[in-house]
Length: 328
Image 1 (cartoon, one colour):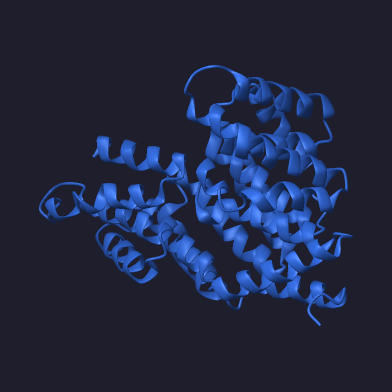
Image 2: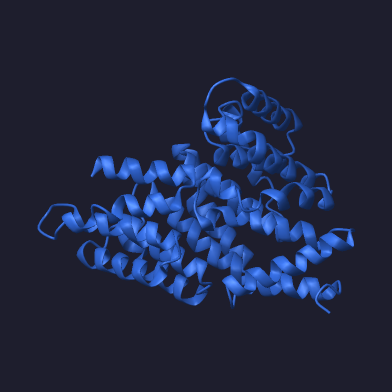
């Protein structure tokens, strides 16, 4: 089980979605119900299926796992993802509310499951309710643990609210107090980009520059570190796009993000987690002065609406596009 979980997580952080799924598929038949912990294998497998868009099969396995062990926070997590990716906001909120007593005391995943809960509220435009979850569950968990999952959840949630025009007050300062010491780590690009959100949100140019400079140095270092190699073509442009967004240069954001949008999966994380970068690109394109880039906004919105129909967030963005005459 430990080897399986390590393999699963390694593929996750490398952005190898199919390999993550298949690493469980090839051993799943051998984990028969009489074997201890076999229900957890269902949950692990369900996540890989969900990330590769096999939503129905993923939900079936996750529910089977929960019928055996309702406290399996990973299977709860899979179902939370499915509702997020399908924009089933009402179903997602009801599921999290009804299952909360079973997962709220789980170690590393409780905070992350609350993050998913908050995403539904952001989708609905219920920003104060989302911030209540942040203040009640996510920030306290971050302060208590300093765990990377809690860090990226905090950064991602505040950044999404920022893009929606919501003032988050001094909350970025709390996050920066945890992330600042990691600015030179450069272990995972996925983490680096979230650390950058914190330094930008807290308006700390020194930490921002330290992160960018040392990441540039890492990208030029000899060796075969896959994260450092990926920084050259994906990580640094992504970081620079965040900086340009903060500096009010939406056209430059589009120039940096558009060529790498299909490669961002390589930094790892889930589809739901990386959606923050999709949203960044759309927001930037909507605010561009270039006519070509405004057409990009229209195309991106049509893509998003096709993949995630009935999304309130997408509909808000479409209305914004219509207001600036992009969809006429």
